[in-house]
Image (cartoon, rainbow, N blue to C red; front, side, top):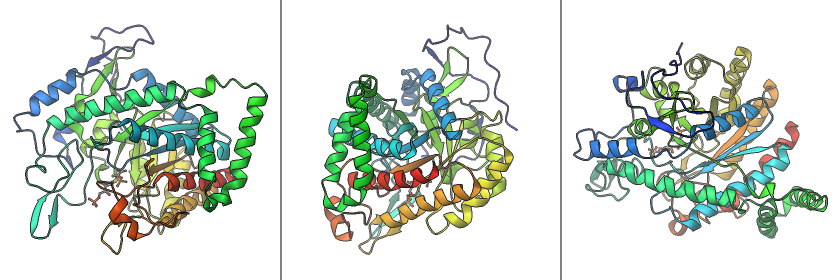
Length: 468
Ligand SMILES: O=C[C@H](O)[C@H](O)COP(=O)(O)O
Ligand SMILES: C=C(OP(=O)(O)O)C(=O)O
């Protein structure tokens, strides 16, 4: 069983509510991961720029504040209790060039649109979270990539190396961590401005959804869209406080894969003396790095953020119970989220035993479905893709499993974008492989485009109405 370190007594604690954070240079246990099995990392410790990049990050301001992280944990506790729904969405791999106002606003806009539809379906608040402002590191199936007769190190996300298929670009460069920090800061700044400055006004979001409904292909969602519209007009007629509804909470999330980056951005919260990863509000451990005795599990067991763990089809009951012991020994609601990514073909067979075991253990975790990562296929023309129908089938399976177990299907985790890309097959626009040459932009895995994301929200809203 993991023990949470005692608060430091030798640091100056400030009054509750203050947002000062100190570095975490010698906090006990925070460097334990360095002696444990560590997967999916670049070999860059000997790089001449490593120390200066690490020092720079260590002295930079935190990207998020411990008080916000605690607030998110309270929101996730509501999800664990079936009182809210969690929506996590964003790029597979953010790119430095993608940090533009247009692209960020399109993604935030799409997440807000999805959230309105889901809020209506669930009749519950939706906790909104972007795979944004830090989703720059990618785990890979293979360390190397071969094209023709050339083999080079695999692309590991722009925080590590470049996507161009040249020897120079694929060399890991620690200065990229500083660039990723700067890009994340810009992204968060814009997200905060959007979501606190009127962009999230419920009436505007509902207008955007009307645009989606104008396409005859989406007429099948007319009933639910009409109901939302009437509900908004009813609230307006009643004189609802739309000032309050102009703002919304929006949290950042990413895979805590690159431990040099996470360690350098860990800070001690001045209120509590406890360590927080300040690179994002919510961080998760991926399917490829979730060994119980591994570095990633150890590191995230020592910080206070709410954490997620991806669970693929090989996950056993013993593993989930041990993960709970390791990451949530205090059984703190909101601390632990399990993100299942079984694949449509597996979910109905593999998920029930895990959900039932967790239910019977009494632990209060959040259950989220990631219907993307278990449904990746290679299209006839060689592109990595996913079928919209498979994705939706996994979502339906997730709801069925929870209904049968009497547990709460707490959320949805999707790779999506606000742009009109063609990366996943199907949806009402019936995207097929022929569109890929023109509109395939992702650097690693295929995302739902704007319309496919909204369509998914409508379908999930229908499923959520049945949960109530
Ligand atoms: O996003 C998830 C992983 O990084 C991705 O699926 C790995 O892809 P690969 O199998 O092409 O390495
Ligand atoms: C790598 C990812 O997923 P997984 O760990 O589930 O493969 C991801 O979500 O980007």
